[in-house]
Image (cartoon, rainbow, N blue to C red):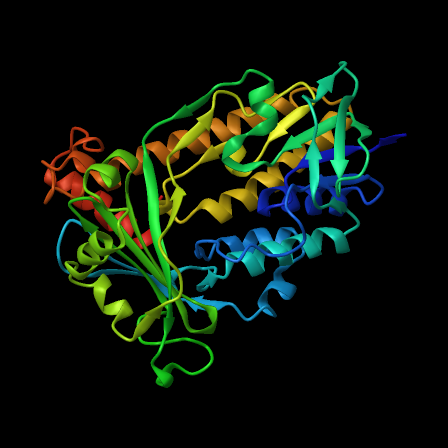
Length: 396
């Protein structure tokens, strides 16, 4: 038995669901299938992330803004950072025309996005495994899938979207190289606030802010999460984590205790989990699309978590890909070229701001982590201008 769809999306994460939502919004007649390897049970551990204020404009475009505001996520008033100095600086979202941001429970948010895609008319197959390599005959993609351990069946579509995350499942099969730019990982742990004064919201002093604090090994990230939880992560390179034994709980905790600001965020908190490790390196496909296929979200590129743009980028790519796919299905020329140009420019801008921001931290210039990221710095006046711009507008 063979089933035909207009668009097949590999991966039902944020980028895949955003693509499906945007496609169904523009063309309600399109049949859209999302293939998800996991089951319908939310993953118990996903590192918390922050949605920047400008993400609200994307929710509005996806007609999700009202529903999102009903979720009750934790408000993010801005970012605090000890970067280039031991003193804390603030980037307040108060001055953003979009309002404040949000601290997100990723497992809950990912499930919510999948529900919205289904409500919009997309079909999601959980526990779906692609067997063999997808085949393209210049008109349709042909895939064999196994669903819920049942017999293999065939599906096809003229357009396929790679939303499989950093693995870039489809793109690798098209012999498109993935270019990695560093070895960054996050070594993180969840905490539960034990201070009863925070109440049910978990909104303790400072939990409305993301905190970033640089250190010789890299930098620390911490943020409040809904229901009184917090996440604290050490961002460093994978080889440095091994040589410095930072994957050992005792060494990781000693490094945390040596911080000036981050350590205060677990003073009244109990660990919920052991240490978890998540790859966080910057990566880009040499090209994010080809005949009959598009890569979105982390399958197309990954950004340093310092940018806080991972979820925003996933939503944005979903919208952009939907426009290109619409033109493709209408046989309009230039859809792929436009998509590739926009994503290449996005990544070029990200790299520029990444270099500039890391150049602001000179206190640990002789440490291997920072040596790998230091570039020829501009004059002190220019660096100050960059610093002011980052503090005013965020990074990038």
